[in-house]
Image: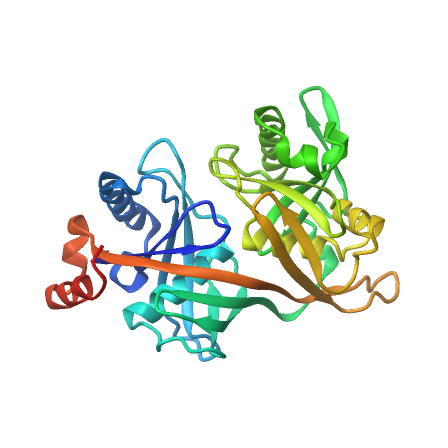
Length: 353
C-alpha cells in the first residue's frame, strides 16, 4: 500500500494520507492496520506525524472526495481518536489525491468538494495557485442548510462555567467543524497579546486542565484530543489574538477548523469571542486571527438575527491564504497485501522519498 505525506502551513505536523478503499471499514480492524502503518512510519523517522487522513473518490454526486480524519495520540502506536476533524488535513488530502491520480491534476480555479465523514461537514477547497509540489487554497465550510446558532452550542448557552482546580472559569463551548472551548486569556491572568504568545508551561497546563473539565461536561474521554481549547483576547493592532492547544502541546498557529470555529463564535451573540471581537470593532466581515505563527483571515457568514425565536444561523465560513506542500509517497511494507503489486511499484517510483 502507498502512503502520502503533505504539509499544510500552520499545522503542527504533516498529514499521512491513505487510500480508504484499501483499508477495512470496521473500526477495530482499521485501527489495527493503522497501528502497523504508524509503527512503520515511526521507524522511518516519522514518529512526529500524528494526523492521518483516509480518502477515496466520493460516490455522492455532490462531492469529489470522501475524507475521514484519524488523530493519532502520543504514547503508543495503537492510540487514536476518531471523534473530530482537521481542516489542514483536508487540504493535505486534496493535494495528495491530485498527485496520486485519485483526483484530476489541480489547476488554478479548480474547486474540490470534500465530504467529511467524521462530522458531515461539506468543504470546498478552491485552488488559487498551483506549483509543482505546492498549492494555495481558499477553503469554505458550507452548511447544506442554515445551521441555527443554538445548534452550535453544545451546552445550550453562549457561556459555561467550568469548575477547575477549585476555581470557576467561564468558557464558551462552540461546535463548528470541531468543538472548541474558548476562554478569555485575561481571566487566567494573561493581560495582552505579547504575554499570551510568551506564556509557557504554566498556561499550557491550565488550558489542558480546562480542556479536561470541558471533556467531562460533554461526556468525552479526558485522554482524547477533543474538545479543543484556545485562549483568546483582543489583538494588539486589531483582530483577535489566539493561542491554541493541540496534541501534544501548543499549536504553532491555530487549526483551520479552529479558525472556522472561532470565526463562527465571533458571530454568536453572548459568547466570549463575540464580546472580544466587539472591543476592537472587528465583529463583522473578514477578521484576522493573530497567532504566534502568523495571521489567518476568516469570514463567517450568518443569517441576520430576527425574533427571539430566530437568533440567526450559520451559512458558511471561509478561510483564505492556506498553503500545502506535497512531501512525497512511499510503499508501506507491512500493508503491501492491501495494494495490487504492480500499482504499488508504479506509485512508489512516481514519488519515492
